[in-house]
Amino acid sequence: VIDQVWPAGDPLPLPAPADSAATPAPLVLAPLPAQPVARSSSNPTHLALYDTCPRKFFLSRLASIRYPEASTAAINTGTLVHKLLAGISTDEPVPPEVEQLVATATNSPLAAELASALWVEREFDFVFAIDDLVIDGTIDLCFESPSGIITIIDYKTGFPRPRAYDLQMALYREALSRLYPGKPIRSELFYLKSNQRIPVDAPLDRALLHRFQSATDFSTQPGPHCQHCPHLGRACPIS
Image (cartoon, rainbow, N blue to C red; front, side, top):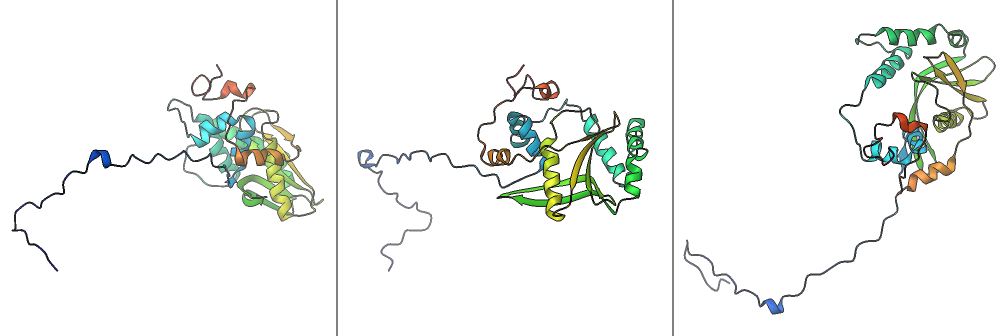
């Protein structure tokens, strides 16, 4: 039922302003308690970065801080070397430095090992879970020798850094152990600049994986790696 009709064009009457004294005070909510952090996935590169320096991991991966003037030459060289060693064709010009690094691998005793291997995988993608942390990554090269030993090779275009890749290689071995249970598995870093193959056999640090999942404190961990950190003297307090 329509009680009243207003002529077209006439403004509708507005209700009288409410009495300010009767207006209820705004509701103030208490802040929610801190919620637990539970990272559910990662990869060996990020985990190794967290292991080296939690603050660098936070600044580079979580905060995604980038510096325009930072050189990408080393990254580009590494990417191109890995492509060529994996047999991936490219239209990019290949600098002499890259050709030399690739030749170091192809002319090394590794070539003979691959020729006699039972199987060879390059750029081998994997995904598996440790407890409730899903880990995915890519292994540069792995193969099984006639003796039944599986070897993992990770190419490096920089200079040797002790312990820097312990966690990464342990995760690679763990990944392959899920596919080949009972098989002996070894891992090596192949530093192409110095033509060195360095075995890495440090055990998997499962406690670190648990810390990573729930980490909220990303403190600086000073060390020799600081010399080449892009955050040094910027977002990092170390100077």
